[in-house]
Amino acid sequence: MKKGIHPEYHTISVKMTDGTVFETRTTWGKAGDTMALDIDPKSHPAWTGGSARLMDTGGRVSKFKNKYAGLGF
Image (cartoon, rainbow, N blue to C red; front, top):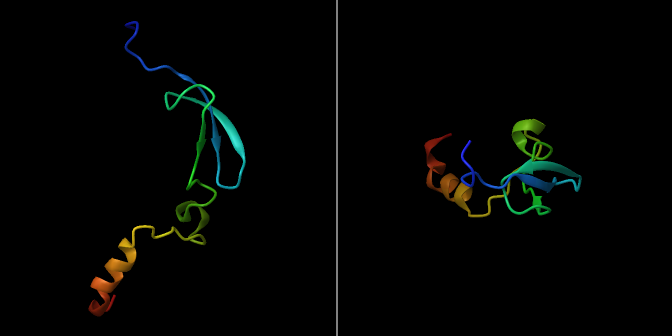
């Protein structure tokens, strides 16, 4: 393996949406940084069976529904 061409591999903390924290190794950020997740397997509808809803921050879902409201979906 060539020296000096690979990114630094270090340990960071990952904070889940429910506040739990775990450590993992990654090339993201700097050693000791904390990554806070907005969506994770505990809150994403794909893993929770659809009970949670994603926030429409950009208004795109509303714009889509208004545009195609009369098509009878």
